Image (cartoon, rainbow, N blue to C red; front, side):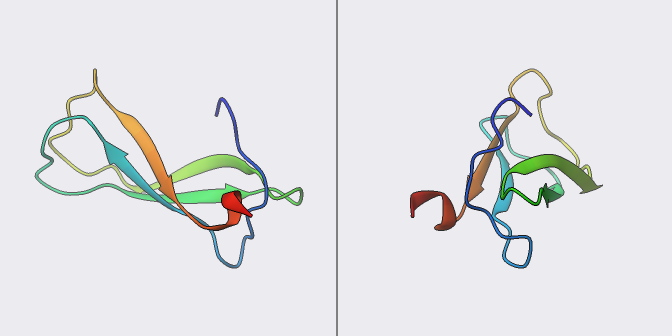
Length: 68
């Protein structure tokens, strides 16, 4: 994790998506681990998905918490 951001809540974590790496056969399922300070401390891979180009992976998040 390069920058975990701020203002996240573990009861309403941001949705993480993998982007810019081709069209997957099956989407990955990612779970952000939120620290007590409200940062994304790590990401747990619940399902790695299938068909991504590993040289082009970029993680994106969607949440209103970081904008507040």
